[in-house]
Image (cartoon, rainbow, N blue to C red; front, side):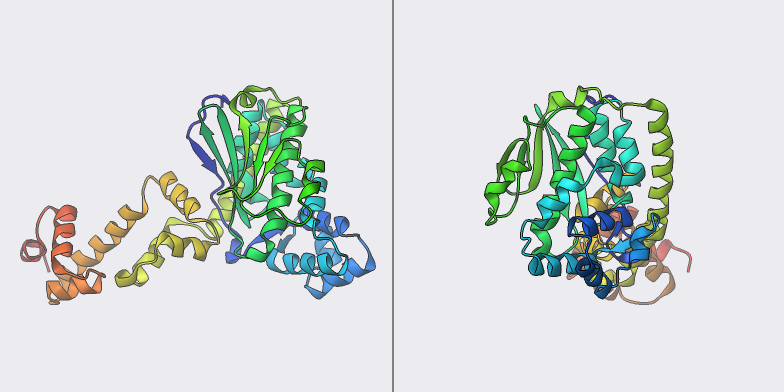
Length: 352
């Protein structure tokens, strides 16, 4: 894929955590463990929150996000480390990302590295989304939090933003002096230290957490490019993505949730909460399945309406109310759009 001709204007990962909870790979949790001191105190703190040394040592293990964040909070207070997010982020090397890291390292261009990072981000962590926008002369990498813990916002975003910077500086072989980093929170008490961690300009109180880069950087060839290794990494990542999807976010699961309460159908935001992802991730998943939320909603309503008209003697008013329509006129209008005739005409013509 050429860096200057992305297949879409916005890219992002689109899977969620198995079992409905957020998690990180053991490599990330182990890195946090060592960054926080790797001492008996840290080990005891992790153990209190259900994270064992054996779990950290297992390269295939996944560590739940909530107990890990609780352990970090406790250690931040006991060790007086308000800037723990910066310390953790500085230590996260691209090699900590598993197969995704291999794909990023072996990418042909920086543009492809960014594309792969956004596409496969959830194979390593699930508590935030990574989105990429191509806008005129800039490429914007945005961090979208999905973990639902506002108290942990600063730590997460600091660490993830430095992770992005570390990865791109490693593959490009140059400092990102050209970057602009924007945080959607107020300057913390240690804001003066940010210049020691970030290569480019830093701003606070923005609308989003994002890194803005000149679009020209997309065409820069990665100093670690390897086509063969990249192909092998992508094969492995595609398999992991499929495993994650099969464990949770599927079209069948989405339709099941929408059919349960047709008169109070879950919104995009409701679905996002169920799958522990952002509503934008749900939209992208549906787009990948060549559909939209509105089409699915209409499909469910059409199926239930036609079933009721064929197999019950419920009045049209009752059917409309059961599907969540506050007035029969709106239901009749929608039904005619679906079937090309009125509900009464359909009932008269349809076999019982």
